[in-house]
Length: 381
Image 1 (cartoon, rainbow, N blue to C red):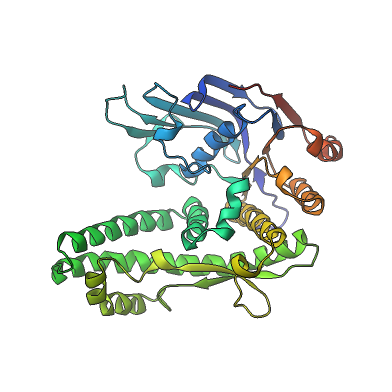
Image 2 (tube, rainbow, N blue to C red; image 1 turned 90 degrees about the vertical axis):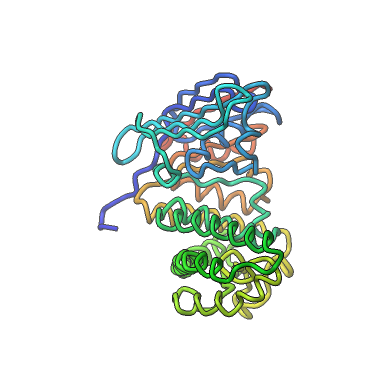
């Protein structure tokens, strides 16, 4: 980054929802740097953050699929976002559904009035980082949760990674279907033809994950130290299913040598879909936090992980992502809350939900001279 250059904060100017969850039609004009939604559970606070996050990843951070987000008795939803970036004002929209409930469902994406026909044309323009209570699943869940976090970060920053991941998953699904249909005696030539692309994309993905984690780990470790005031020390360890699989010859050798086993097991037993991401103590590098960490240590790690995502994305894009903070402050103890609020002082635009404003009073008083607050009180939908 050139000396004297400061990352430009992304800034949402308006959000429009049509038939999205509990909202039939709603448009919110945004003027604040810090936008706080105050309301009881069920008031629709998280829904607004969910809609914003869709513009970044096309995925709900609440784990919902597109059909779940269509309002009851409606056939489609629309989310529209107007925002300012370093390149000026932009408008993005994403809709899902059909003309009626019996019509074919499809996703429709637009950027500045131009249709985006592929996911890779849409993702990456607008960056967010979500902080939510369910983030703890990254630590306590299985290997898939951790891979999913890495994939979301990388897909939003590297088009090649996103395309490779989409292609890999498609081929993996076809390969498994081939094994099942053939009853464990699939045509080896047919499988070998699929494996050419499986190896190509798997190698790209593993190489990108390896390079990313090599850089990301330093940011993460520093933030663990910051959040815990020096009492914790954890590092990220990448454990790929195929050793040295970032080299195409190594990846190819592993896939070809296990092909007979795969046919017998009717599944692909090796590859990037079985990689593991470990959070281990600095000394041994062996004990994963899911087994040996206290609940407080797990909260420290997941908070540092999301803060590191913000720092890494800011560096890569030269823009500050929008922060979406969904009822997280109540999950933190006093010391971690203080650290997180200090972190927010250097963030760009942030959207925060809370059931009452008392947890944010100190933050508001500290920052009111340097940031514009917009506080919205919400009733139940």
